[in-house]
Length: 239
Image (cartoon, rainbow, N blue to C red; front, side, top):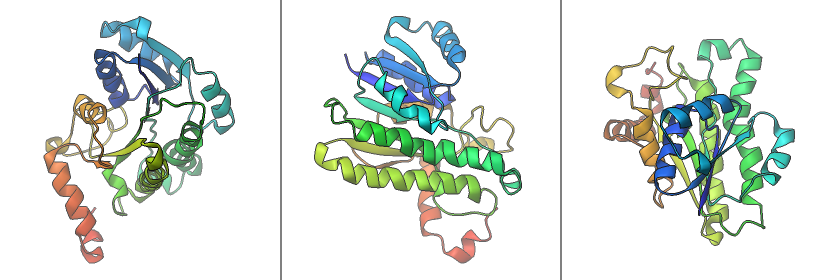
């Protein structure tokens, strides 16, 4: 039986992905700071609890990552990094602890644990690493450039990791998502027509192919290309 390790498993997308992986016959190691919420989700969805193992994981507790990884009950075939934390850009400009936590969750914590995964010579099973990133990291915009910079750094790391692991035939994907209806966006005013459901993003995660950048949703594919190609003078006029 193949094993998927989900880091940040209490996120809305991660929980939906967990359900899909279980439907495909995987064993799931659900790692999060909120294990009771994961247990409740398993019960609520009537998922096969015998194939779900929960482990405490804090993306920002770098010193614990080595022991966490060493104690896993099985070496993963697939790793999904979905840990997230967000403060608004206005907050981030004046609240350094919140800003640092966002940086550590999205980038430093990801590098810390995924380096351990990638460099584990004792795991011949590793076949894929997936990172949940964001379109906010495509271009710097004045409304969210601090959050966006953490996602841009994460995407860049994943791109390099993909090249590094290519000789070992390990695929690395970056799911570059737009607005998701989730706990993290609950307090934000976002256009309803652009909101995607966590289950929709999860299907893109679980169905990831060999390409690097995965942008779920046709509207967001268009927005992604526009953001990439837009001249700086026009990007400056965006919110």
